[in-house]
Length: 311
Ligand code: FAD
Image (tube, rainbow, N blue to C red; front, side, top):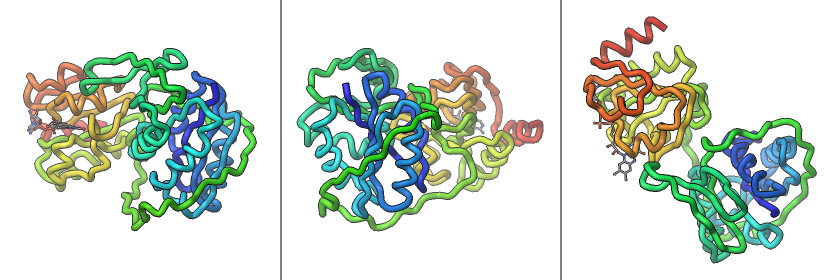
């Protein structure tokens, strides 16, 4: 089986989720990696992809139309390449979830979303009901289009491969969308989806000011990424890209600290695979304690500064 994966990259480096998708793809067959981008950054990303263990070939589509990986331009590019492939795998990230359904629609096949395991060439598992059940799905389509849950697969080694890089040409600008601008928060913290430790704050923090006053120092001490519940994001205490959960990011760090988060199923869907869950909540009956390995019952405004100090 020949498999194409869509590489996500930034500033010439591969995103961690792509390394997990490569591991998933290798279970299906020979892996070719498509880098869509422009100029030196795309070239650097292609060179990095060529070094990943398990990648047999890199296709580099370099064109100003692919610089921001607009899904409207990248999807037809992938479709033009799919004659040679039995499956396309994208990350189950905002980007992958933007591109893959367009490819599936253009190929007139089903998409299997958020794949957690590859059981065979046509059989996959994926979460349903906000992660409360796992469905085994068999696709009878000739070509498979999958999005892959990064936390379910280990990352492929970034070194060890030596794949050739070949140029791929697509139709370029589809004329359907235009890149206007990107505002992204710059941070020295680890990326939320790949951090070893995550400290997340909930509605109980009460304000953006207190969110940062309490959560930031604790995260600093632990070299942790910062997450948030949707309630905290909706209230404006934390930016949108901090959101963990069903409609946010899926994380599975070694340690997840939930501060003033009740543990609604939609939040648990994004973090319950964490190795150790520590919950701080004043309500001993809060559902978060059902998944927590360590629970601190009490007022977070006292417990969090105390914990930070002791660390
Ligand atoms: P609350 O539920 O209000 O909990 C606050 C907690 O803080 C309580 O348990 C309380 O006991 C505790 N507390 C209060 N004061 C203190 C104090 N001083 N000290 C210690 N503890 C204190 N939510 C997500 O997080 N992520 C998602 O991706 C997501 N997607 C959703 C998708 C859909 C379709 C829907 C319907 C909902 C979604 N939600 C999601 C929302 C989810 O249902 C909850 O509303 C949300 O997670 C609640 O956030 P919270 O735990 O911060 O707030």
